[in-house]
Image (cartoon, rainbow, N blue to C red):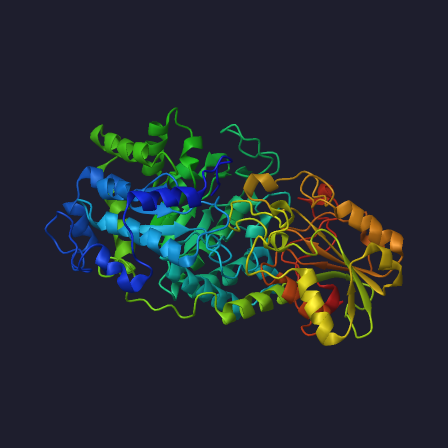
Length: 624
């Protein structure tokens, strides 16, 4: 999924939506007052949706109503009154508003959409979707968990399942019932800007973690979504798709795979289907030269051979880049390929109309449309939406922003730290003077990375020093707290560096998402490096003091030029809002190193795609 560069603020647009509608609810307990009795809705069909089969409901709908169910629009472009007039199947969040909405503001918003959906002629409840890929990352005031690359490094199945349950529980407070996660990409080239969304390059690591997260999220009544089908992490550098005018080095490129490699990826999806995942998102990328959004062969394999009975959804506006000469042609091509719901930020109305026209012109069969709609209605029925459209009968397992959520996030952050060089003792002890430097040292936004409140996220430095994440703890803050407990002293004044015993050098990448993270050099001092990296590196090197380097990045970056300068090197990846505390726990010896590399570590970009590498998957200097 991607977000347009010129986003209209979610906050402003939702405020407009509130002005257009009257919404007085503050929680699920009062949501039924929005539209009368819950559980007996039947639209204008004359049948009780709560007791009817999906086939019976589908048969009662007009072609226009069926087509509307097959489209998902973006919250900034599809207003509640659009739901009353057309009853679209789903609405999704976009990233662009900061400070973010609180959970009760989100709940009011979602309930208002639902009230309008139920008041429509069709009266079908809708589903609200969100990219809750590492927490409810569009809602203010809750924990932001480590990204998937950290989860792969920690490889803690039990905690990953609990993380899923915690995220799902928080989602219930917002009314959002569909998360576009887990991402099951097996990232094979660190130059890809979505590498941090991948648990690992290895299916043996990806599969059990994805299953665990899915089990956790589903335990709270939340729809999970396996993505991106198929081969998104296997695309080749230099094949990035630029058909929409955006230059991409690798993102949305072509995965050139043989049958054995394809089967290995299919097995990951088979495991998710067997777990009960009810939605699958198609990849922007191509497989052996064919765009996945129009790849009828492999979408059919998903449905017919893997036994997937849920919703196949397109990715954000991706059908626009298929082989048709117009949007209408692409709608027809992709629906016929087997896509059931179109994620269309702004063109939701046109796509709905093109489905109708395709049917009327004999270009989309009634069977194909009915199959898509029945799948959508079946998922909604499985969620209990026809009896309980506002989720009044669902009790979250945890409090909003629970202490347990922070504890799990902190533990996962600590477990995900991977020492790749240990030539000295990293433990901070009583009496030490510890010099902390680098642009990542006091920046929670950098710890959280992309997909945090906005599409690409942001650094605290970019907001004038305001904390990007209100619940976050920076590395410096956590170490200052630990210093009081363990008896060492934190120093940040460069004039005092010579009197210190150790340097903690905190450097890394700026937050990014998708193709904006594509790179040809993987450099910490290039375009994607945090401002001030080079100066901090030089300061530490010139001090002559033993240095422990913490790398905050969404992938294994190239550090060949600096390895000899640093005594200890720890890959921290993107550890989230509790990352500072997790790092402090390890540096004080409270938690031992347990993380291992989830992907190969290369010495140079020339090694990528070859059998040569610096460090293998599973490596930890703590175990050598």
